[in-house]
Image (cartoon, rainbow, N blue to C red; front, side):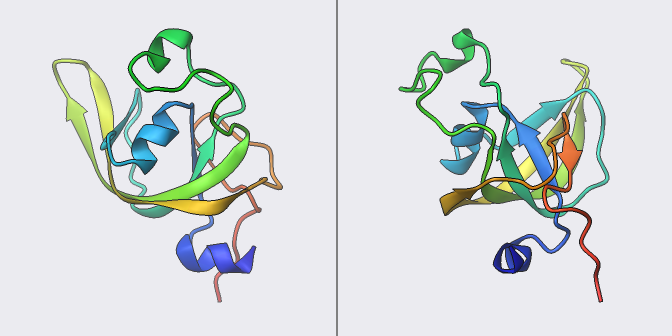
Length: 125
């Protein structure tokens, strides 16, 4: 997995359901919405959660549950900011420069609901 650490030096991943991962990878989704803020910045792995999102989330995507990979790391994205959206009372993690991996990667560690280290914590020299 060393070649992927060149892409994601922190070794950190964010877990997101499909079809949202696909929308991030195609540049259609620029924010990930969460109930908690984050101080995390930089490139992170994109982990497609094992369970896809609710069926109503798939409308207008051109896909249906089962069409897109789940339970795998499918790419990476830069987290560049975190903003509080007062009207919706939610935080938006601003995303930039998504990269799709040619071949999805199975994580070695069990995924967590938000942030986790799919290959264990990286020991930086």
